[in-house]
Image 1 (cartoon, rainbow, N blue to C red):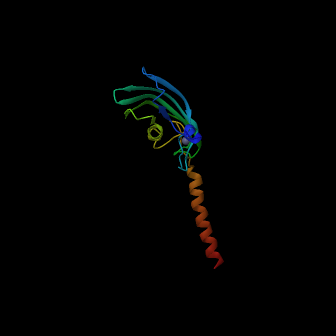
Image 2: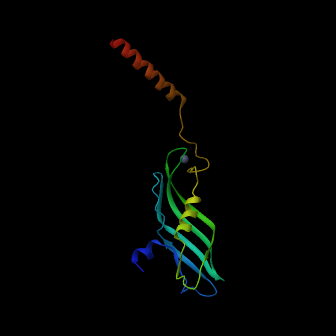
Image 3: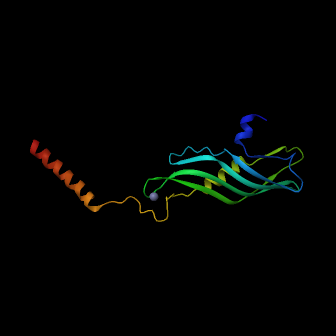
Length: 152
Ligand SMILES: [Zn+2]
């Protein structure tokens, strides 16, 4: 196994998996998000129970990933932990299967659980627009126009 594979993959070694099933817990760096306003930090914390039943590997458990997001209402950065409480997948296996790779499924379920419209808090007031400032701006525009007229 290459070193980078062991660090950035979430996979289960079937040869070492106990017959009665086994709980896997740890942290793995598998989220690599290029979105401008979505920055994962730390790794995915996982607590997954895996067990072979007939020709399938069943995996069930929890996943968590911390993110630095930008609030859609006020534009402020805030931290949020994205939690997947009910991760469940099954994988077809056979005698020759050595590893089952959960990386893509784990990554996808975290990304799908991210809020579509992240807000820093339910009570976020958003960007507070003062109506007087707004009208001030409009008067400034008029003032500029008047100056231009005067310059001619
Ligand atoms: Zn906000």
